Image (cartoon, rainbow, N blue to C red; front, side, top):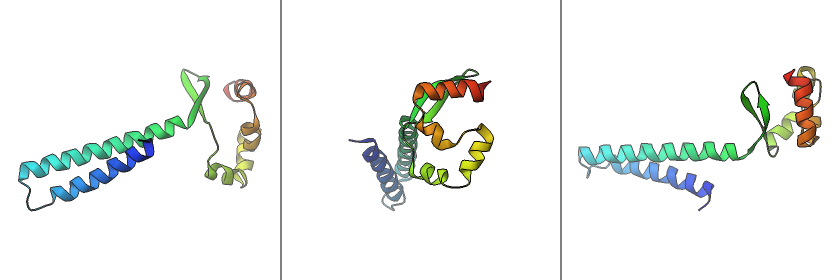
Length: 119
């Protein structure tokens, strides 16, 4: 089972359990148990989605006691943002275009991060 399949399963099960809990055939205790189980499946789905996002990140160093992460791959949204005025804002803020940061090797990025941003 993939993480996407697990998320889908949890969400489908949560929906089914909520529907079952509303059934007239259920006792009050059974309905409460169904609602609780549905809530737990939704929580699992949320955690799996969070895990999925963390897997897209890569630790690149530490800053002031905090680990600095970057995305392993650019998302479609990030690629679109690069082509807009946000690129100019990024350059104005950090003195370098975002596309230049993405093009850096990890060692060059850490060198730039230490020299330009952290100091």
